[in-house]
Length: 301
Ligand SMILES: NC(=[NH2+])NCCC[C@H](N)C(=O)O
Ligand SMILES: [Mn+2]
Ligand SMILES: [Mn+2]
Image 1 (cartoon, helix red, strand yellow):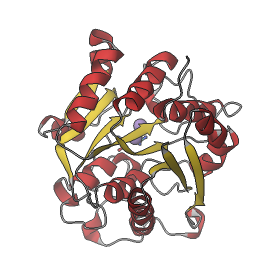
Image 2: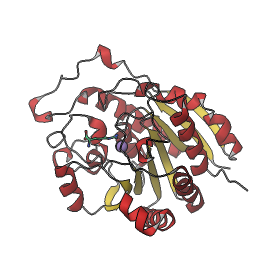
Image 3: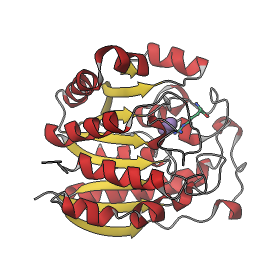
C-alpha cells in the first residue's frame, strides 16, 4: 500500500496576491485525506510548515546581486525546511504530497526529492516558471522555481535553490501557453522537453502525457509531479493568481493524473497556486483534491 504524507506549505512570498497561503487549508477542507484514503493509500498529515506572514517581512531586503526577486531570504528559509521534510519523507518510504502555497514551493520539493536520487519532473502548468532574478518581469519567485532547481543562469551555484540530481533532459512541460520572451528563448535553448497546449490539441492528451512520463522517467529513480492549478482552464479553476485562458479540460486533467498513477514512477508531488480568496465556493481546491486522488490511484471502476 502506498503511503502518502501531506506537507502543507502556506507561503505566498512568491507572488503578489495574498490568499494563496490559505491553499493548504482549502485543499484539506475539500476532503483530501478522505479522497486519498478512498483511492486506497495510507495517508498521514504532517501538518503545515510554519511560514511567517508576508506582511511581517520586507520584500525588498536583498543584496544587489540578487536582482529583482522578492522575498528571496524568506523563500530560502521555507525551501530549506521543505527540502528536509521531503527528503525525510522519501527516506521513510512514503510519497510526499506538498500543498502550496504558490509555485515557489517547488524549489524545496525538487531539492528534497533529488537529494539522494536521480529524479525527473513533469511540470503541468500554463507557465514555464523558468525566469531568473534578472529576466523576471515581475520579481515574483513563483515564476522562477524550475530555473532555480536546474541552476539556470544566475541560479547556478545558489546552493539552497539547486536540485542536485535533476537534469534538464528529464524535465518535461505539459500544457504551456504563457511565456515571457526571455523565458521562451531560454527554454528553447535548454535540453528540456516542452509540450504546449497546441501539442495537446494536435496529438491529444493521451499521447502527450505518455511521452512526458517516458522522457521524465528515462534513466532516473523517480519522477516529481508539479501540478499548478492554472494548468487547467480558468473556467473550471478560477481560484488562481495568474489565470490564462485556453487550459486543459476537467477530463484531460484527470486522464493525465490517472496516467501518472498507472506509470508507477511517482516519487513526490506538489499541488500549488490554489488561492481561496479568488476561488468560487472552493471549487478549485476541490479540483486539486480530486486530481491528487487520481494521481495516487483513484479509479472509476
Ligand atoms: N507559478 C506561476 N503561476 N507562475 C506565473 C509566472 C508569471 C510570469 N511568467 C512571471 O514570471 O512573473
Ligand atoms: Mn502557472
Ligand atoms: Mn507555475
